[in-house]
Each structure stands twice: as structure tokens, then as C-alpha cells.
Image 1 (cartoon, rainbow, N blue to C red):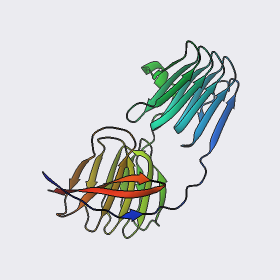
Image 2: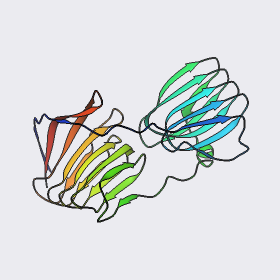
Image 3: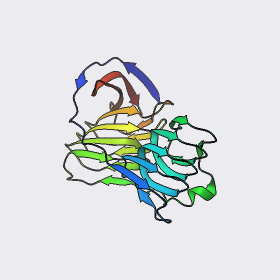
Image 4: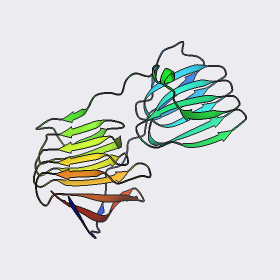
Length: 231
């Protein structure tokens, strides 16, 4: 597979974001798995055992002696304020950004026994033929787009993206090294990585299709050099 690069510069303005939800857990929820719904989560109190699913963008732990098992989106931020807190996390790629203010606090990838407390990652996100343009949360998910003639914004760190709908525009946040498959003509595939790491593994079955690396710039996306991929 040959790879060629050329420079492309243009500005693409995206719609304004809706405020992300905030989950606040006060005290021990008694074994009930919480869901941050791809937003932010806060654990407030002392001595609680908390399990949080839902690919959180940020996690704050405020108190002492808490044990938190959490599902994080790639590139998430974890803040721990207090003493002897333990945070065990699952993420699709990379490691979170961590800030700790206290003594004896631990933030690390979850062990197998801790992962068992989290629900399994959800199945693929499928955008069917005829679906309207829109924005979709894809943190840790494989995405398959069958729709044609639409624009689909994928946010949160997709694990992989497959596009077989023609004349489709895709703007996707990807985990590093994510597989991207383009199987139709007229696909505009634009991506940004949610964490440092290798570029996506791009495979096309239609000559001339490409994936374009873009970069956020003051709330917009600025296209950077295009990666042209030839089968």
C-alpha cells in the first residue's frame, strides 16, 4: 500500500457543543453501577466503593479512602483531592492525564478482577442506510456507516471506523492506530486523534479515497496534510 501526502488547508466550523452531563456520587451507592454517559463524574465523600461506566471525559475524586473503578474515554482527565484514594480505570487507548493533591493516592489501569466490576464494552455503533446527518458518541466503539449523502460527527475516541455509504462526510475522533476502512466513492474521511500515538491504519477499496488529519483550532477543525492511500 503506497502512501502519499499533500498539503490541504481549509477551515471547517462545527456546531456548538451541548453541555456534557455531570454525574455526582455522594457516599457509597451500595454496589450499583453508575453511568457518566460520556460526560463528567465526581465522587464526593469518604470510604466509598464506586463503579462508574460510560466512557467518562473527566473524573474528580474529592475525599479520602475511596475506591473507584471507572471507564474512561481516551485522553480523559482524572483529578484526585484527598488521601488514600484508589482509582482503577479502563480506557480504549493511552492513559489519562492525572492530577493528585494528597497522600497515598493511586491512579492506575484496572486489574482483571477490577475490570469484572464494569459492564463489558458495548457492541458496534451502526449508522444504517437512510440515517440523517448527526453527531454520535463513539468512545471505545467500532463504528460502521452504511448511510450515504450525509455528514456524521463521531466523538469520544472511536476504536475503528468503516464507511461503505457513498458521498458521505465523516469527522471522527479516533484512538491512536485505529483501523479505518473506506469502501465507497465520494467519502470525505476526516480525523483527529484523541491521544498521542500512531496514525490510523487506513484501508480503501475504491481508488483515490483518502483520510485527512485535522486539528482543533479555537473550537474549529483545521485540516492538515492529507494522507492519500492507494490500494
